[in-house]
Length: 337
Image (cartoon, rainbow, N blue to C red):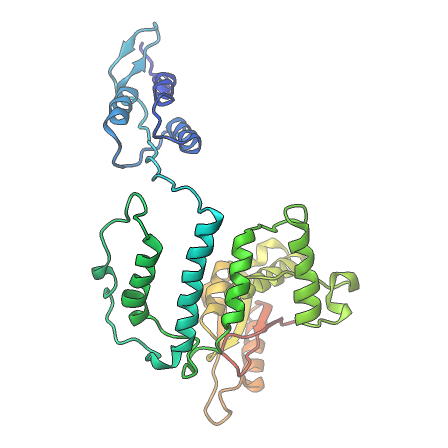
């Protein structure tokens, strides 16, 4: 009986693909892995690749060494990459950099003239943009891009740095920070380990932990504390819940995962319940403790105690209480009992 080899035609397909200059080495490796894995992805491919794709998709090998036309495992092909323009030389980089700095300086000089909230409707920007990006930068493309930012983007921006912006939370940047961001982007290091960028790692410890936060010794690694710096408060919320969850499950056993209960007030930012759900807390085990206008919408110890007693009586495992600060309903967090 004839049998079909699971990856018949793959070797010939790969051999032919190596002769096509529109695939980078990385794309080719992705293609090879996708082909062996047997997945297919609909995409538009150049005609030479389509011909080879069809060949690999239909060529099979039988048990006696012959070839057949029974469809083989579907394959995927990577899209060709867009051309990469060369980097700017030093003089051109300086010239274009001045254009960007001047643009930002003018923006800050006039920021109080803009309406804080734009008067636009959803889709306003998409209708004004071209259907596709240019395949290659046109002459003086940066100046044209800055004009588009001025004429198309700024009319739709909520101006967080405006002196008349009071929503959400306080503005967190100024033009000094923009220069620092430019310097960091220019160096473009990735300090995910000490060896990856020793100076960046140590600057985090000295500048952020010591100079900026002035954390006491007890909260530093050297004093038995320590922790991690995250990009957003949503990430921080999730990290804290996961740490509390793992510590509690180590005490009560993994089988009690479904009994874990977390608490917050009905004024808490929605990111808390989202983080709890991501951490595996059941939807029905996220307790919102009601607040009232009379109490200033603060967390009521009496209402919280009643919710805790009810959960204890039901055999639940008390895990986490999300505290609330008045600055924003985003919260700092602490473990319950």
